[in-house]
Length: 189
Image (cartoon, rainbow, N blue to C red; front, side, top):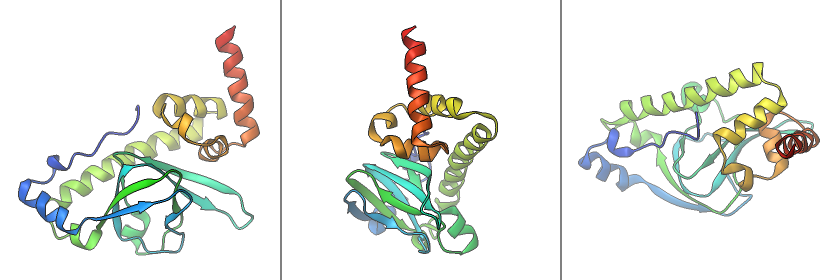
């Protein structure tokens, strides 16, 4: 899978439903290093990224940080754990770049006739992403994970700081540096 399949509202909403959707969309601009939500919050929102880059991060008690996911232009996301269990979010979502977002309250979305088709599409996209990442984490070494990252999300390598790419891949920044050096040497030789 290269990049993520874009979500096209027209696939699930007719013109009348699209107008209703727009009536309760709230726009939000987030500066870098600002959280959209924190672990422990109850984010009952669907978020659509119009511009910018965000990360979903988990911070352990000892301060170690892991990146669950990145979200960028065209992405839509929900905290599925909160939606399905009612429990608070287990991760924070933070802007890495200036972001322009559209926020759609789930309570409003769930009343629309297009919601089941929309939700089904969101689940399919997330399941594909999660299945691929899980398999890679289980079977691929650090170098394979990084090469997959480069193939799947080529634009992110330049937009995301190295330590955050490492946190997404489940490796240390030093390991990432060594992998890059090794790949560069191979490419030149």
